Length: 303
Image 1 (cartoon, rainbow, N blue to C red):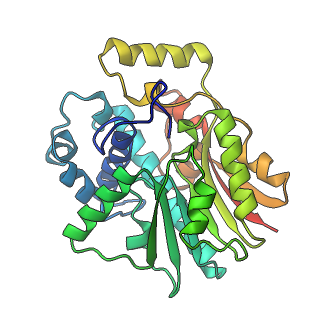
Image 2 (spheres, one colour; image 1 turned 90 degrees about the horizontal axis):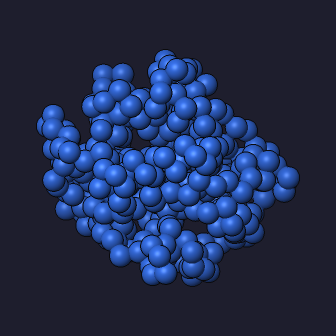
């Protein structure tokens, strides 16, 4: 996750990067309520209600004043569809990896990902969840209070991805001599280009042949447009909101980076996937169209 000035982040689940995890959970929960839901995460609403405040009110018809909860606007409706599609894509990815016999799962910046609890993992599967301790603590405590039990062996790796996360992962029992399945969902935008390069290198070094990888990536916005979005948030008194937390950088496209290192990669543009699912986003939408057109979902396997 990104630093704040010269210091490490000081935040809880409802602020800064933590709030982005709740934003995604809120969108997944709203998608799950649809009769034609693209994906159903039964724990997403549980997290939001546990956080309280506007995160709980969004399900009772009130989104409050926070710009981060514009889920009833046109942009919000498309964002909910995007989260449903993204969840469906990565759920299917894990199903294929599991069918291939992979039983080491690595969730990078796991956030409020509940896949350890809701997907039908094979016996012996170990799910490693890497994230800030505050996020992991919140997730564990909320799901325990809800009576939920993981459907695989779940191992928390409380580590900042700016630190030695490969070492922390190994210390938690990860075996680099066996295939693994990795995911970087909603992560790359919170890393500068140099950190993305280091993340890819760490994955490649630990991934045994036969390993799988799934990545969500987006093309950077034009610099002037990105700066304007940041200024809009500052003018609205929304410091610490989305555009002030993310980096507008990309080291290399994931398919090209991993493809050049012996991985077989397949890239799917988000608008194409949404079209296939019957949830097209109008290309001329001033907010959602450009956002969707910049995002791709990538799956790769290591030969």
